[in-house]
Length: 239
Image 1 (cartoon, helix red, strand yellow):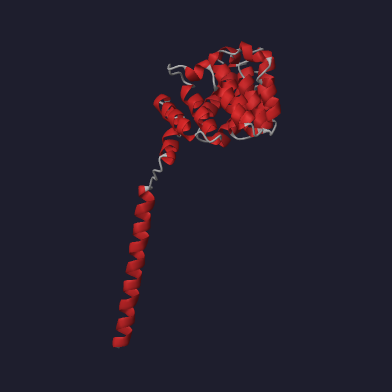
Image 2 (cartoon, helix red, strand yellow):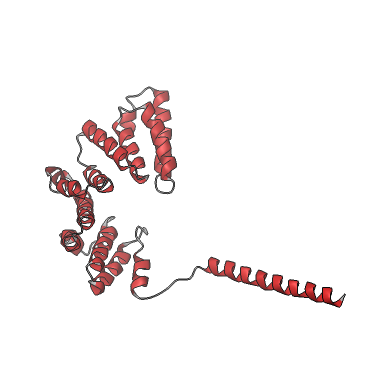
């Protein structure tokens, strides 16, 4: 990205960089704010591929899939890279076109992806199958050497989780539980809610301690109110 920004005048490059930093900082927690900063960067430097890509991810995180797809396509034209192919396919899913996403999973661009990219494409393809009501096909789509491997990679937890979820949808609850457990083992970054899904399958219910405290406080207040009201009535009668 730094190299791309060097093509801009120094002051402009600094302004664009500041906005891109804010996009990266806010993308996960406050996507709408990140989207706003991406629009500023886009207005300043729309011919920079990194800016188009950042705008695409901000729009994607905000659920603006048509806009995201447009920006990803622009970035891809500028760089010639296939790296964005999986997220572009997922945008097609977001736009209600799972058939298009599935078709993209069979294109030659997939062969140009690294291993992580190919796993992402597999996840998108499985999601498209489920969108189309093909739950059993989604299970088969996720079965791969990466899923069978005992090695842990940044994408391992998400792949195992998706497989567990697909198994659960087709009624294979015992296997689903096993794979949710395996997802949890690999989920060092907390990228999934595998622990919650396991608890659900085991019939465990969690109680929010804060909600309990609030409920107890409300109950105590209600008792105090009633007691106070009763005392006032007694005083009135005594008079």
